[in-house]
Amino acid sequence: MTAMLEVKNIEVAYGKIVAVKDVSLTVNQGEIVTLIGSNGAGKSTTLRTISGLLKPRKGEITFKGERIDGKPGHTIVSAGICQSPEGRRIFPRMSARENLELGAFLRNDKAGVAADMERVLDLFPHLRERIEQRAGTMSGGEQQMLAVSRALMGAPSLLLLDEPSMGLAPILVEAIFDTIVKIREQGTTILLIEQNAMVALEVADRAYVMESGEVKMSGKASDLKKDEAITKAYLGGH
Amino acid sequence: MSTALVKPQNVTRSNRKWIIGYSIAGAFLYFVYQFLLNWEGLPLGIYDAINRWMPPAAVNESLVYVIMALGLNIVVGYAGLLDLGYVAFWAIGGYCAGWFMSEFFYFLKIHFFGAVPAEAPGIHINFWLVLIIGGFVCAFFGALIGAPTLRLKSDYLALVTLGFGEIIPQIFFNGENFFGFNISNGTKGIVQVDPIPVGFKDLGPFDFGWKLLIFLFLAAVMVFISLRLRRGRLGRAWLAIREDELAASMMGVPLMRTKLLSYAVGAFAGGLGGVAFATHVNGVYAERFNFAISIFLLAMVVLGGMGNVWGVILGAFVLSWVNGNGLSAFGALYNERFGTEIDFASFTFLLFGLVLILMMLFRREGLLPESRLKLVLHEGDIDEREASGKKAR
Image (cartoon, rainbow over all chains, first blue to last red; front, top):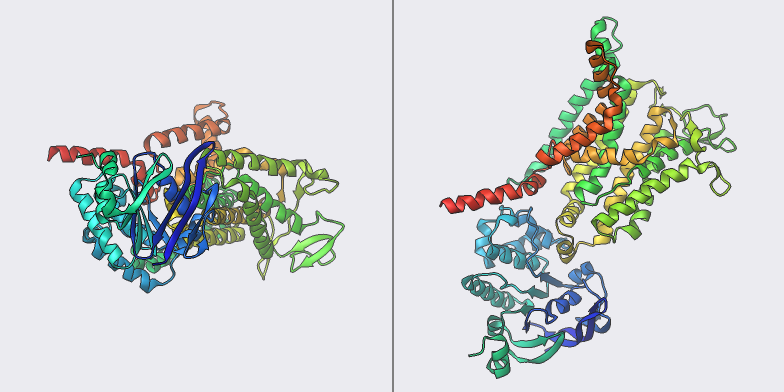
């Protein structure tokens, strides 16, 4: 397998406070990789650095063999990395359709955009019914579906998902994660950031465990799920 | 709770509709001011009333304000960037007219389809060309000022634009000796701007009726630009930035370029307005470009309805009318009737302040709101209603 995304020894700081130090991770073509860890472990900072919102102080990030660290957000989107951000950040005053159309902002192939619109609406049939509804009036689960769909509309080769389970009822979490697996089956590589380690390890191939800004452990998701330390720290320890 | 959306197939139809409505309104205004006012059979009472409440010069001035308010609306209403220094673009546009279509540079003799005799000194470029030059010079300055400042967020951006709006007029105010050059004639101003050539006639300062048509045309151009941009890719990018800058950038909207374009397009309109105003008052006067104008234009956008071109046009007409003739005409009537001697015109800003406070209390979305904005500003009410509805169930 070839490394699609390669993060090498990055350090990211907010002023004097170092949020991420010496983090390295790789995501291979066709994988679901998850980055788990508790609140404030530096997961979102890592993700924001990948998507160009933050610049690493040290280290480098390559995507399909090209350096992308420090590049502005829109060039990273056009390189093929789209994200569903933490807290969803849908455009509340626009309809679901307008949100999806904005997801395809950089694309010029009308036919492809229309086809992808159909594709995401097949993935989330519930959205189809609400397509003209104002996004701000949707429920949390619907908004999360919209955020994921919107990211997919950019036709990414790598999809970044930041806490898709946040604030959702267990049954909705299950539905979203089922869809995440489907998205991978359709050929999109996924980097998944989660606090809910249990579900994340369920769908992922490999995982990285972050703690206070560093990667503490990494390996196959199925192995990590059996690891006692992980079970204790993140899975509620049985 | 679903919102009605304008479907793409309605776009051309609604485009045609506004052009018809606009033409009818424009033709009516033109008829009144070009023919009715000059008709000898017009009863003296009506003649007096029109001249007292809405004289030809006031209509033209309102239209100049419409042009500029529409430009500011692109920055404030569409892209959601607060600009408190818009008057700077008006000034730059005005001086473009002063430089390129008057005898100000008397030591030069450059003519380019100008509307003056060939032996006149100074630079005399055709009005229509100067319009475009003024627009682009302003757009250039808009981008120049925007480049370093647009990285700032909301309040800070507003403060920097405020400073810019002070600096540019001050440069012109003291421009009699700008590093050894006279760029503005200082407080004396540049008097007498070339007439507007329209083929069969050259329009001087008193051809109100004909100039009304020209200003109507320029305002229509701005309406057209506004509506087209709004529907296009750029308009959606502005809207996304207004809604959520961070999310917009995650969708691939290039933030700096998109914001700079809103500044440049807005400034372009400021340039058009500046050139038009110079021909309207037949000169360029530094003291007219003050901070109050920036606020005045902003008030037009807010009062009318941010983001909605028709609202902004209404706002521009209402406020420039109150400021220009409405209040003083009302004052004269009141004083006549009740034998008082109140100087109503001096209460203009008191009235504006009151109107803005009342608007913020009762109608935050403006007189003719953009549907989307209305939803936001009453979001609290809706949510409460929805919440209580759920409880009842």
